[in-house]
Image 1 (cartoon, rainbow, N blue to C red):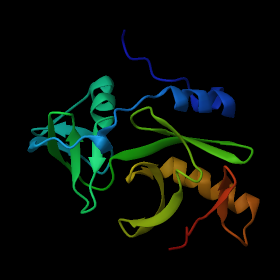
Image 2 (cartoon, rainbow, N blue to C red; image 1 turned 60 degrees about the vertical axis):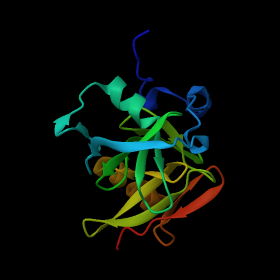
Image 3 (cartoon, helix red, strand yellow; image 1 turned 30 degrees about the vertical axis):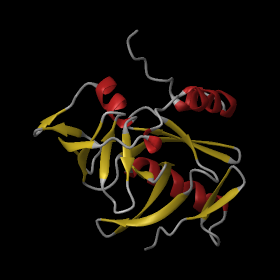
Length: 184
């Protein structure tokens, strides 16, 4: 069965987004501890593109499959993990980019460059970090893996926060308030 990306976020309500998130079954990479390790000769660029031996991986289904095997360890090393082996992978910034956001009442859903959907909340917090000297929102995806918000998503979040309360800049999602430091 060929891979079909989920529909556009703007076409979905929050219940439909939650259903799509629940349907995504990821392998239990955190519980796998293979004895064999090596180098994948792969890199995730700061713009979210994936490379193998210097050549870009252009098939979205391949990127999506590899992204489901990602794990980060306490020292900040990234790995592609299977039950048989773990292979190091270089990550320039973070492994994911939030390329779309949809604000539904008191929830914010994000689409990642891998077509994964994430709803910000207690398990998936938003924090501001400096990227190239500029404060940018980052979204926790899972198990220590993060997504940096793309420029259009960043601007959308900032505009929403400014319109909601210019005195207390931030966003509410799933009952949690996430302060935005857009001034640096």
